Image 1 (tube, rainbow, N blue to C red):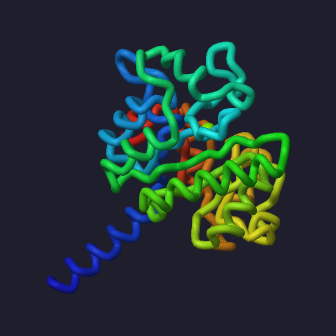
Image 2 (image 1 turned 60 degrees about the horizontal axis):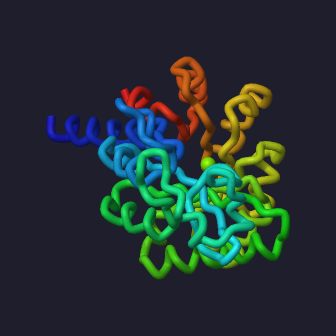
Length: 247
Ligand code: MG
């Protein structure tokens, strides 16, 4: 009997590990009432859900401050062409201050069980990309958040630069044109692709898993798409409805 219980405990642990994990896309902001995506409040909401992680977008201002925003613009201001003191005059739509990476990491540190999925946005100059990577990594290390942070980018240069500086950091590529084998050759840890890419390449999830790569898909806001990916054994999905897919 004891052996049986022990056996079942092992099996259930393995099954749990094999389950698809949920990542909130730009935090959990589709609440009632809704809050602003990429706000500190959205990260705080994600912390309450007890999911795997919360994703957010990092950009750099003209004077080199790292801020959290999806679009290139904050209001009408182009972030990369505007100094932080001008950007912060405009609050977020939920009344919060325009968040910096530091604000975000401080909130993230309050709950070590929630992974911080750091998306570094591409920039048209490789030098600037290397600068944003170097600054982001420095801040994460200064705040001792190395083991709580994972990285994603549409820029192959950014992904490779993170791995060059910190080989132990987990880095996944977002852009979708590289096969699992190519991702492995580039020295990255995984692929985080739009679900349509996995529909077009139905063998990729299995191939990636066989190569030991992390598999993730965005932005999955539909239970049917979620179940299809889950049945293929995907490791993670990134979603705007983390509360619903968690069930
Ligand atoms: Mg993003």
